[in-house]
Amino acid sequence: MPPEPEASALNLRRLRTYTFFTVIGTGPAVLFLAVLFIAGSDMSDIDMALAGGAATVSVVLCTAALALHWHGQGPLRRKVFWSVSLVMLVLGAAAEARSGTVEGMWAAPAGMLVAEFALWFRPGRRARALLLACVAVLAAVVVFAQLGWFSIGAVVVTVLMVPTVSTAVVCQLWHYQVAQELENARGLAAELAVAEERLRFAGELHDIQGGNLQAITLKAQVARRLVTVDPERAEAEMRAVEELARAALKDAREVVGGYRKVALADEIDSAARILESAGVQATVPDAAPSLDEDTQKLLGLLVREATTNLIRHAEPTAANVSIVEVDAQVTVTVTNNGAPSPTGHGNGLTMLKDRFTEAGGTVEHVHDGDRFILKGTVPKAAPQHPQVPPQRREAKPRRAVPVRRIAPKRVRR
Image (cartoon, rainbow, N blue to C red; front, top):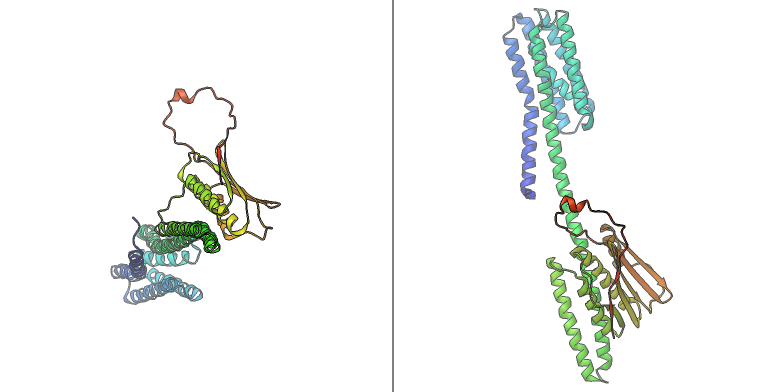
């Protein structure tokens, strides 16, 4: 399970503190190693003081450059500190060379210089810069050893310390950067999830309550007109308004809870009832085909959106809903008359197109005189077949023949 946001942020702060003290603490550790080498050398007091002072200044300046990198400040100052640190490293090694061959006390400070040099580059190029810098330092030490300036021990210590110190510093910073990017990605994913949930809620609320509220409005208008002419029928219309209001309330609660399941057959029956209440002759399929849940939801939303639109924006007298299956695709078409002139696309059709597109389907709508045709096509999910034995799988192939099935219809008046 992923960590809670508070725990994740706390862990990132702890990792930041740990990385800071690990990287900055490399300086004192490197200086301590250099002092141990100096204390065990055979240098004179003056050369020992010069070498110790040079090592201290070099390590302090390089540590300061790393601190500036950590806070994202002073790229120019970092290069100045690094340059002075390199000069002090060379002068300290020269002071030791006056008393004999140079030992390995300068390997750890050189590793810090290599790490700071690699951090000048972008993250994608740091590994290459680190490798090239380590190879350059090792090659220089080998050449100096061949000239007699460095001892064999210095070569061995350099081979061990320079890659170890430099890689440790760079990798610590890289680990923290990766953790920070993951935390940012987690926050972005949370924001996207909230935005997606808001869009889902808005779409569900529009799809569900649009048709219900429009039907309630029509029923209330009919009841108002009949209250003085035919009180019994007006009372029946008001009972229908009450039932629709209760259904709308139930649907709203299910949307809020996220539990509502959209079934194509239920949406077709609901559309037939709403159209019948509005005095529209509706021709709908007798039964919906057996489809997976996601496909039924998409096609059900199309039927719901078409019903809402034709009641809200048109003055139809007849509407037709058809379902056609061709091979691995299902197409639902809703046609009605009494459509007004096109004035643009509403939010409902836009959201519907987006949902069909995500599922690999299409939504088309056409104005033909006073007829409005809304057609949605979506691929059916592949059926889950049991494991087929090899001998059956190798049966002689047959030419595929497109299958076209049209659901039978009934008329609701």
